[in-house]
Length: 476
Image 1 (cartoon, rainbow, N blue to C red):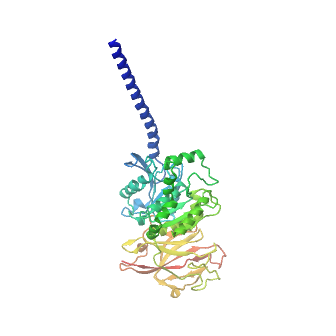
Image 2 (cartoon, helix red, strand yellow; image 1 turned 120 degrees about the vertical axis):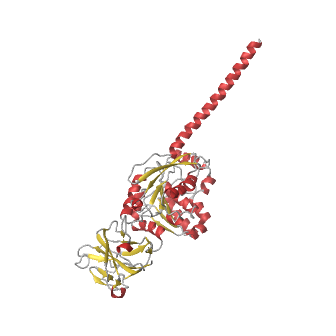
Image 3 (spheres, rainbow, N blue to C red; image 1 turned 45 degrees about the horizontal axis):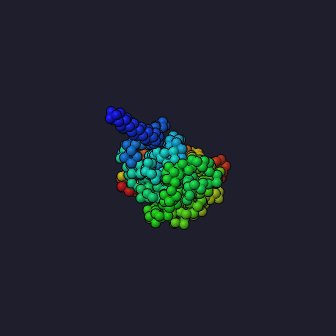
């Protein structure tokens, strides 16, 4: 009898042990089942595209290997002592790598054509629906990984301008929302925030735009995964609240903000009140709604035209260097056939306006980063040139369809072809202007102008026109 009792107790103990082990095994399997997709979300695998590098790092915050991609301009290799600004591009919802290759090509073309300064583009990984914020339950610390780990890593691994003045945060759709919230929250880190086709911007995540295509079930799942279905946590992390909380600091920091959304984009419904909110808070920003543009990042930037490129240049380079003279807007000499341009431009050309030349960057011989930029011009051949004198006391003289402003010892700097009604010099691996222009060691004042082809019989029979003149004082 005693023997049977002992056997029974041992059997029960073994059974209990087996059940305990089974429960633990089940919990382990469940944990691994959830951990595997999480690890997969943190590491996207490589995108193969010209000059795009796939990188990973071990994240303490995520407890996983995290991937990101980086595009570097060609002169990153040819100018080994130069440092470059960084554009952090935040992707929209869905697979994080879908936009890497097309956007890398887009920015590559823009840099090659001189539309924007050479810069490094970083494509962080924000998960399919990570919303560029830390999830309430702590399992997706996306903001912490980006701001606390990735930014320092990029500055340590690449020749960046590791300062606020050298960083822009930009994104589209979910990424536009991310750029808005991170720009408002971390205004001390970025010089500019570009908010493109942004969403969600509403104050209640579950109240979607009337034209939204996100299924209700998926919306509810995102709400739970990111914000724990907590309306207070969601509201506290919206761009709306962060802008309101940090308005005074954002204004004081000088953060350059632009918001753009296509007029045919469903998300314009929530962008309109956000624009009004920023205005009410006194946060200066550009706002554009190009007609006919739907929910497409490249179409939106294309439709913005010159204003798109101005945002990058002005954010990273500041106010123009030097001053304009010899204007074809009626304040100087008369244009050849009454073809007066708009204020600050040269004489009007065949696209209906005059070309405005400006210079940006440093005019120091010790650190020559000066770049000449002209727009809008016909997409035809044009010539940047330098002179030592201003003609006709700086008023200019009729020449072709415009005014000749620059004379003396003239140096031809570079011939280019306009693209998207814009051109710039230097671009790519061009020699600095001070070297091309043979500036003396003591520096001095030089004058610049752009000659360009115009449509036949627009004004005179000459088929060419000129920009305004631009004066630059070079220092040693």
